[in-house]
Structures are given as C-alpha cells and as structure tokens.
Amino acid sequence: MPMATPGVASREALQVPRVCAGVSRLPIRPSAGRSPARGAVSCRAKQNGTTGLQEVGQAVSAAAAAVMLGLGAVAGPALAAELDILLEPTPTSRYVIDDAGVLSKATKRELNERLQKLEAKTNYRLEVATVRKLEFETDPFAFGDKVIEKWYPSVEQGTNKGILLVVSSAKEGALTGGPGFLKAVGDDLIDSIVGDNIPIFTEEEKFNETVLSSVKRIEATFTGQEDPGAPERADRTRKRTYRTKAETEKGKGVTSTVVISLLVISFVVPMLQYYGYTAKE
Image (cartoon, rainbow, N blue to C red; front, side):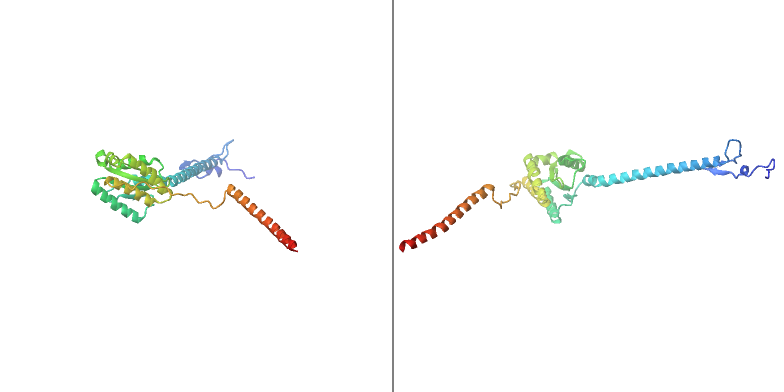
C-alpha cells in the first residue's frame, strides 16, 4: 500500500478556500477526532437556516397581506357609504346627493328645481341625501348633524341649512339642520316626516316618493301653505276566500235538512198517489 510522503500535505489539507455567507474560510486540516467535512456541513446548515427564516418571513407577509385585503374588501363599501357624503365639498349648485342610487333622474331634477326656488324665496337651504347603509354612525340624526357641521363649520353659516337623509337598507332617515332651520320646520313636522313619510314609502321601495313627499311638506311649511299631510299606510288586509268552521257547520246543517226533506217527499208523494188510485177503485 503506497505511503504518503512525509512533509507533503494530503489532498484534503490542500483544499481551496471556500466562501460561506460572504466569509472566507481557511483550508481545514485533518486532526484527531475532527472530521474534515465539518466546516462544509456547518456552512450548509447556516445557508439552510437562513433560507428557512426567509421562507417563514415571506409566508407571514403573504398571510398578513391576505388578511388586510380581506378586511379592506369587507369594510371598504361600508366605509365608503358614509365617507362619500362626508368628503363631499360644501354644496353650492346642487341639492341632491344620491349615494345609494335609488332616485331617478326625473326626481333629482325636480328636487333641484324645487329646492333652488325654496332657497331663493325663503333663504332656507335643504339638501337631500341618500345612503345605502350607516356602519360607523348608525344614528341617522347624529350622522346628519355631522354632515351639516362638516359643510358649515360655524353656527352662522349653518343656522338656516338642513338635510333630509334617507337610509335605504334600514328604511329609516332623519331631518335635521341648524338652529334656524329646525325652528322653522318645527318638531311636529320632523316627527311626522321621520315617522310617516320615510318608513311608509321606503317599506314599499318607493324612494322617489319618499323624498318628494317630504320636500313638498317642508316647502309648504316654509312658504306658509297648507301641509299636504302624512301618507297613510295601504290597507293590506286580504279578503277571505274560504269559509270559517262555523260557516261550514251551518252549511252542513242546511244541506242535511234539504236532503232529508227531499227523501221524505220522494217517499210520501208516491204513497199518496197510490192511495188515491186504490180509493177510486
């Protein structure tokens, strides 16, 4: 067996320096109790450990992104329904914000014309706003007050301003505004519009009639005309097309009497006829 030449390093000892994670390693010389491949194993372990941490980090980042996207998809429409109105600039030329998309073009045109004339004649400005749903400020009156405060920060600016709010999904709404507006409208009319006009028509999905009937009542109050009055709920009582138990029992009694009478007649009449014939003979 060939022997290694003394003083000459073996091939394992003359390894080319390797780089692990950017750090140069010196050639590993074999010694007692130490494996020549230990440095390579350690290097690979560090590389694998780094790769594993990177994969875990990427997985966590992906999961967080998915959660954020899911929350955004859920909260986005709900938040937009309210922010769309709150972020609207102070109205100047238009009087209708149909964020819920429940009003027809003809209704919006008529509302703009009526409310423009009302402001020019009485100096009271009324805005009509529809929203599909309230998520964060669920009270329509509180949300309406926020809108007025946002559009008209000072009392002087907003005293004669008001808003008629309709929440389409909840079938409810509010009529609120500045001190001067509320005083001119009166609590009775506010209660009637919120308690009658809005719920009665919205329950039947008649959103155009909801706002038009309410605006006409407000318009009449501001101009000194007679209030058209609140709508009445439609009579949904269906006519009964079947008989009650008492009526059925009564009918059975009449039927039984008629049947028995016919049986008696059919039996007695022939007997009388036969008796008449035999008596003559």
